[in-house]
Length: 116
Image 1 (cartoon, rainbow, N blue to C red):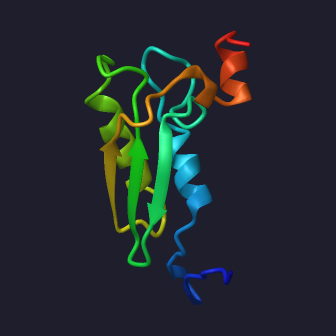
Image 2 (image 1 turned 180 degrees about the horizontal axis):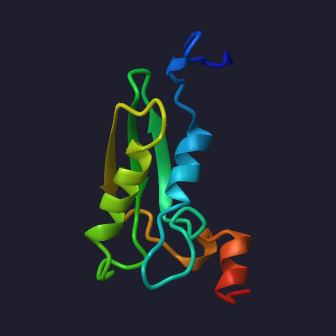
């Protein structure tokens, strides 16, 4: 698999290469207001698709369909991803299949929430 590079000039990178790691780091800045763990570590992010034109699609879920942050979290995730160098646009889609459960949480999230 070849690695994609951005376009460089003496002033720096003009069209930075879009990296999944950078999108993940951006998503890790989004927290549910009621839970002190980011949406990525909670396991709410199901898929990240990067297109060659800089468009990003994120599929995520919420802990429950009645989540009080149902409107805020997807918008916060979209805004965070739009700040990543190389992102031309972002669409966040909320999906309910498969349903979220605690097994999707990272070990760090379980420790932070005392859910061993």
